[in-house]
Picture 1 (cartoon, one colour):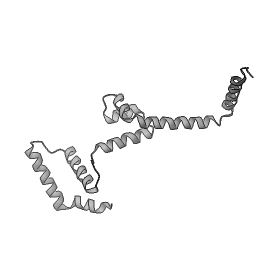
Picture 2 (cartoon, rainbow, N blue to C red):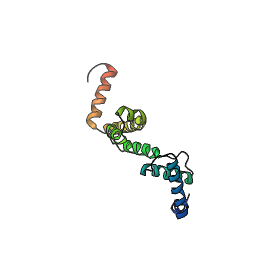
Picture 3 (cartoon, rainbow, N blue to C red):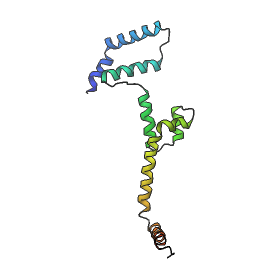
Picture 4 (cartoon, rainbow, N blue to C red):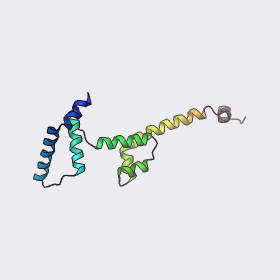
Length: 137
């Protein structure tokens, strides 16, 4: 989808002014003050509606950020702090699959490198020989 019509629609003076007035009136009726965060959430929700994204909300960006940080090797403890979780256990519960996948990749990388190490290969061969016949070589 071409983003230009969406941006033009959001930035059009009449549409933006009507939208802001409607939001302000709704906020006044509920006696809640307008906030920058609330305005941003509503604008994002509207943009997602226009773009056809179901259930668009800021939390999607939060999840994406957390996963990207973990995939790039940022420690779980730091991601937990950035997300404002009360404990790293909360972060682990939600994001452990991405760390586990990364851990599996790291283990495969280490195994690949070790398989090229001549000293390690000689030791493995010696150990396998001992295991096969029961006698040290």
